[in-house]
Image 1 (cartoon, rainbow, N blue to C red):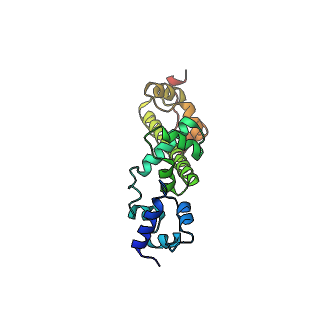
Image 2: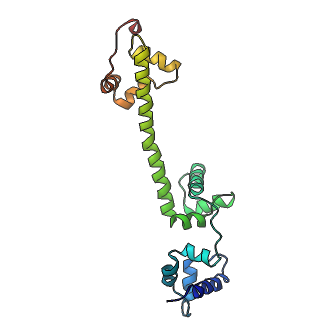
Length: 194
């Protein structure tokens, strides 16, 4: 087992031969030398990134996780479905996390893409629930104040106060009647049916 001092010395020596030292470059360099193996490095530092930081070869990342996710979303919005090469080119012209930052943070390009996709799915699965809450609130509010209460009076009120429309409520609940049945609200007869 190599000491921390030996690992740091080996990393700094290997790094002097290349601008940014990767695991593959280090493994090639260390073959046939009495240098710490990649597994020695992992057993002491846990990750390649931690070893590079300890040896002074990697600046502490200036980008947070949300910065990386935001950059990936923006690149995807501008470029469409991204490959790592497309992202590298896109990022080279902007002050955003580099492809290396992204891969170091997430572990790989595909894991970064999957993380962003999961966040998008969570956003879109939470959104309909918020939308349903807004509809329920609007229906109860209208039921309290509209005399008579029915689809026609509700639609006029909803349009005036920018609330979910009858059509939107119907799509969300299956039908206008299903929405009212689910909430225990009943239409009342009157002038609004004209």
